[in-house]
Image (tube, rainbow, N blue to C red):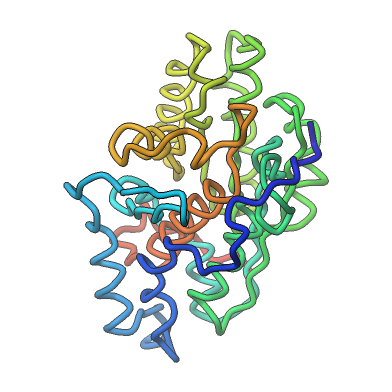
Length: 304
């Protein structure tokens, strides 16, 4: 389960079409970030383009597809905007100090379904974030292990999450429990246990819910799990990347067939899906990390 199938979605070596949508956000700024009075500021052009991206695509028509090249990855920053600022990441960006991100999860974090490990979403996100913040060293550690459920991940939290001392933890969860019909009576309690352990090290948090894919949709419990993760994120005041809803819109709004963004086995994402997720998630991280903190209730203390 842990070895990704060796297939390449776009073998022509072309620049993927999705780069044209958000590419201008990251390539036309020799100094994307500047400092002023101790606050992180985005240059005027980058701020404008991030603002444009936040509302880009609302009401746009379906994305056309052809056999010649992959379809464009349509950004939905308004959908994926994180409810909570990423204060710890933002504090590091202000000082251009190294930022460490841990991505923990199961096989879709590891990158099953991608043609190479470099095509996994953590690897793609690292590349995107380094482009957005070229003056800050950023590393994304892929701590995905295929087949794991929430209890399995909690058992390795000490080594996989605590030891690296991350500034941000991205926790992908729920899929394996759904497809195996293994939902415990109190999954919310297990998620809260993990969140408490992450908070104890002073890291920001983003949850990622299951994928919108045929083998997940075949399970009646899938919508309940997606809703439970969203409700827990809201109650615990942590960020949520709504992967299920994002992929659902690829299928139902953009009219993309499953084979565009999922692998042939009908569960994992493929190169295109991981790349689009990483692009979307990176813009959401950048916006939340540079968002002004309006009150002490939402402000996160800076770690030494």
